[in-house]
Image (cartoon, rainbow, N blue to C red; front, side, top):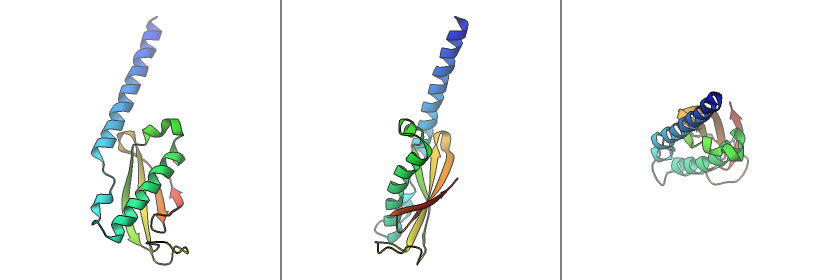
Length: 125
């Protein structure tokens, strides 16, 4: 009986820590998009890259049932890189780096979003 109670207490503690870790990450981090002036190409690329990275980052790192463990994606860099994209897309000469974080702000992966936020070409672990 004591073992069962200890196991239940451990499970409750782990669940509590996951909730606290998720809350800390979700409430203390921003998306990084607002660092760029509204209406600028950098802002448009950051916003499009953030949307793509949220979807791709969660799929790549965690199964759908555990996507709540990845509460935050942050755009860390937006830069002009002419010629890297062969498609004719808006803001095609821009690329962004997005960092995927899990609970307690633990970085999991960096995603390289290219062609103005239209393609996710590669990611680094």
